[in-house]
Amino acid sequence: MSKQQKEEVAENQPQEVDESAGNGGSETPGPEPETTGEAVKEGDEIEFIRNRINDLEAENSELKSQYLRKSADFENFRKRMFREKEEAVKYANSGLLSDIVTIIDDFERAIKSSEESRDFDSFHSGIELIEKQFTGMLERNWGLKRFESVGEPFDPQKHEAINMEEREGIDDQTVIEDYQKGYFLHDRVLRNAKVKVGIPKPAEKTGENDENQGNEE
Image (cartoon, rainbow, N blue to C red; front, top):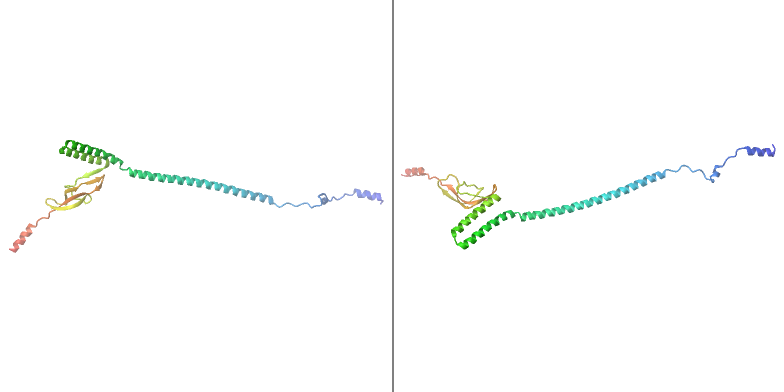
């Protein structure tokens, strides 16, 4: 084979392509590890936790503010109730005293009238009238009622026995004198009456005494 024929054969043969040379002599890189997705996921979790912490801190701050406001409101309410209670106790008798001052006016008029007239009978009658008005007002408006005891059976719930005396003609312990009047407040005894109590006088044993005298004779 001539030289020219050899050159033609060489030209017609396919030439191998050096891929490594085309890439600058470096090897083709393999698949990269999946680290990017994991990093993104971890970053989202951190961001979520941070946001959640911020939300909880804001909620805690709001709850604390609400608690402080409620605590201040309760303290103000407690002080107001205490003040109202003090005022209620302080002025609880204002209605009673308002009625009493009217009776005091009547006393002043009676005293002034007696000074001018020097009439004892008129003064005495005026005082009796004022006393009846006074007790009537207390019973009507305030439920204070004076009770009578003389002639009533002795009741330790109502009466306080100051003295006792034997009396004929009575079968049970009976009030025979009223030293100090007793009072009811509605249906409850406000003050016991101080009284003298009469007790049955023991019967004389005349028959037994006559028999004893006959035996002695």
